[in-house]
Image (cartoon, rainbow, N blue to C red; front, side, top):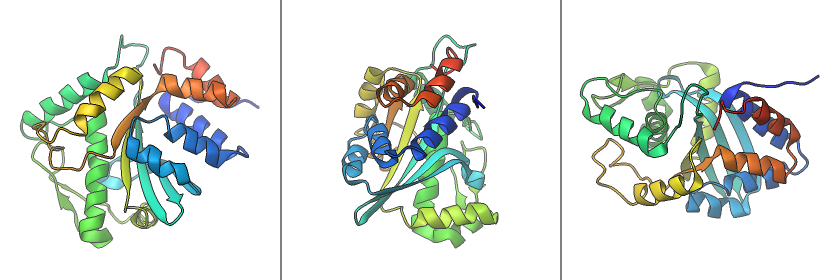
Length: 248
């Protein structure tokens, strides 16, 4: 039997399942995360000892996460929120800088104008979720935390779903270090140029300006393709080939 998934969700599933069932799963995870343009994450993963992965995990009002990785590195713990975007066959291109410009426009356009499908909106929600978990705890997240006027919801809550809450409890143990990673159909050079400025710029006139952006970064689908070839991840490569033109 062959299972071939569609677009980013199918590819994400194939990638992490193939890594998980490999006898080199820890090394492969380390190699994959080392591709990200995020120096603090790469440094942390040098001593990686254990990984737990949640795929398409709901965080209620804070959105679904394409991937959440809980990382153990000796006596240190950390959490990675990864959001994937693709260039569908109907689009000529997908550019990180343009995505950020759309995010800025939503931030400055007034009431409830921030697109929930925008990469930066989604990662912002995860960042606020983790900050809320640190500041007010799970009970506080159940009551809700206030979001800016540009958000589609004034107050966001974690809700009472038992499965969601069990994951939140797990994340709570790993929040001492956090990263917000984009997997996108742009170029490595574009990612390096963008995040070099993004992580240092605290005057970007958006709702991100008050957040610690040192843990933000990204990698490309093209890097994932090369990663699959290098480590002979044939199932994932098959899914990528099937979705040619649909992902990057």
